[in-house]
Amino acid sequence: MIQVEPVHAPERSIALDRLAVDPPIDTLVDLLVDQAVRSPDREFLRFADGSWTFAEVDDWTSRLARRLATADGVRPGDRVAIMLPNVVQWPIAWLAILKAGAVTVPVNSAYQRADLEFVLRDSGARVLFTDAGHAGLVEVVRTATSELADLRVVDASSPAELAAYPAERPAVEITGATLANLQYTSGTTGFPKACMLTHEYWARIGWFCANANSLGADDVALTSQPFSYMDPQWNTALCLTIGAPLVVLPRFSASGFMTDVREHRATFVYVLGSMPTLLFKQPPTPRDRDNDLRIVLCSAIPVALHAELEQRWGAPWREIFGMTETGVDLFSLPESTDDIGSGRLGQPVPTKQVRVVDPQGREVGDGESGELITSGKPMMLGYWNRPEETAQTLRDGWLHTGDVAVREAGSYRLIGRIKDMVRRGGENIASAEVERVLERDDTVVATAVVGVPDELFGEEVKAFVQLAPGVEESRETAERILNHARNHLARFKLPRYVEFVADFPRTPSERVSKPALKARAIEHPGTTYDLQPPRD
Image (cartoon, rainbow, N blue to C red; front, side):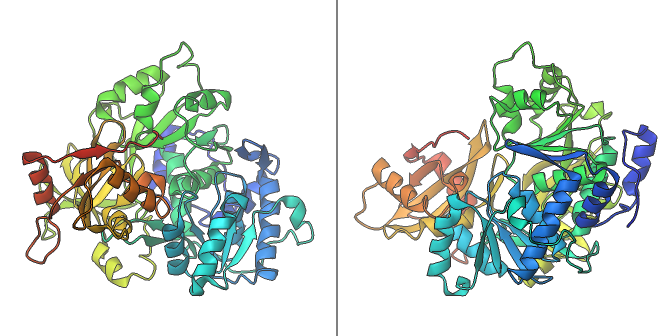
């Protein structure tokens, strides 16, 4: 086992020198073992119902890994899914799956039947961790799909239930190149794609964020996003790197978030999407600056609020840019005060190269727009079972992000995107996926889903719907269509707005022309029904 000195908030020059260095330990399981040996009694995971030390988590996950290998027949390379809310059993299951040499398939706990069935079938998962709250849905999907008849459903276990299994992890070879996750992310085609992420991918993100922000064992990280997203997972990798506790909230609450930050004495948080705006909309209190925050990382900090966010809570807010496919590409250092309110994403990670190119792949000059492409580490291996889409996205060693950016003053700023996606808060929603579900309704001929501007979430989902002849265009019809879709889509994917149309403008290849559709809606607006769900 490699021994590594913990990162104890070193001098900035030392920390920055480490950014280009490979992480000394490049697997999540070895990071856990290392911390359990050096700091066995140090707190690692803190949830609403308790906390667990590195040694306790190491013991629990080793016994669960043994159970997976013996009782459930899990072998290296097998896919094991997790469909759980933010409970301690989520990271326990994740680390146990990895100790067994298997591959984790995170499943959003908000998924309904269509989403869940697709992910389980596409991944080929043999085992699924879930709880009583999701067991009914899982059983409906399992029994209705012949391909899933052999899926083994496992309840999230407690340490006491695993006492009969040895505390030594299975003897399987795990390296940095070992596949760790099939992390699903919606793609431009509308079919979710699974990014193949290795142990090294996670270890690199943890190592980079620790050193870029001088985080160490005295820090406390806090997260509130669902654990099925990559953010709490890389936060876990960060805390395994520095030997610090990770506080996991059940969910994000704008009214309670900063109170939790204060009560848990969190020094580091990562937020994204609508979270900064929702936080800022909370009434100011005299205790706003009464916190221990040292750094807040955020993707897409609202430009107009950037300085006010820092002033209100008394900590630097800095951009970090990446995708599930790429981990981390661009970052703004804590001392980069010129970035405040500029919308700039910062400089490339030292282990990455970043370019802005035209459609022919030629690099454009400063101030000119083009597609942002990136190369280096961390990086996904490719898309699971999607060789053609992998080849389209990863070309000559460069990953094409689909984002339109400009380079200015050694930094980068996003100005749009190529992909047909709706980005609602922190969610990437593939238009085609929503269209496919809406069109299952017998009264719907065709649909086109687009993003429309929204002050809170950045974008909201709007569906243009062509109805079958004789079907009434009314609010009641719109509500009925969405109620049908509600059983197949997570709530955040449901359209807020519905506009009925007689037909769609189309391209020569008979595809719906969404630019023409949007232009027509502006010039000749129809009736738009606002079916606003409860705010997240």
